[in-house]
Length: 416
Image 1 (tube, rainbow, N blue to C red):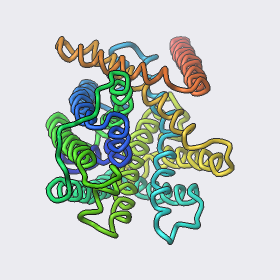
Image 2: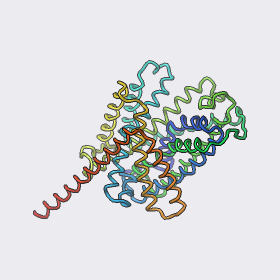
Image 3: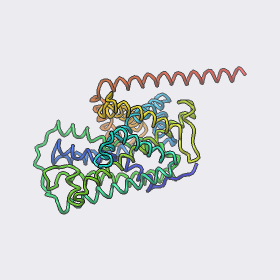
Image 4: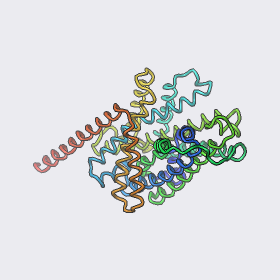
């Protein structure tokens, strides 16, 4: 297998997917909740984000393979938990990317060209474009995400810095401190660090993984932390009545600020879609080859892309979009369902990191992360937790099926 991903390409892949639409949506929400104390919340979250990134990069290097961190989870807790965490991630990606594309489509409706087109149709069109990129393999994926990430990061950085220098009113926070509001804000901002769990699924295409992953992690963290802090500072101090992304882009881009935000948000949403669908389709292909999923998912095309796994995910996304279009589900329900599985996957991965890492300081930080994610999980709707329980039972059933097949095969071979 050719190794197509270097440090810069991987950095673009990681940074774009972790930033996603969160860089547009989360800073204004944090400021609305706790005012000037939002910066303190962002600093805490970014520090915990460093630990989160380190744990999943460590797990990816500990047991490298296209199944990602799930392999290390299996080594820590056994094969059942390896399959369970893979199933959680797969279930999350059946819903999450659809929500990301709907968010991007909502932004694109700001353009007159798309204003009269249904959001779900725009979203599906974007999914088809992303699927075609994924079909051309990891090299094409890396180039596209690097361009999109670089473009959007420069736009956001320039707009935020210009506002801080020329159109801001820097002042000491006057907002009274509320422990309950601050705690709720911290829980909300944990979504800003989700995304590192997928990185390990690309490890077989990474040049010199031990060196490249660490370098890419460092570069990505610098980009992610810098952008979040600068954007949050700009929103807090902008000399405008509204404290949102539009307000901090307007001083530099003027009447073009809305198209700029639309382009940035859409680009980052595409990065997230490409990263997670690309990673999970690779994992599904490997699991298909290992008889953990239907064998047809294991097909790899001449570009090294898991074609059948990608097509299957896109078909699932089409069904979710159709259900959204006919108002059987809405964006909030799609996000809720995806979040439950992303959180569950992250909790198991962090628990594996807690067991495999020996630093007391890291164990304390990991414990904080696990506790925070568990609290977020308990805030989920009951119906989404019932789906989570259903996936757990299906995982137990599939685990027994695979074990029985192994026993049958071993008995057959011994008889012969």
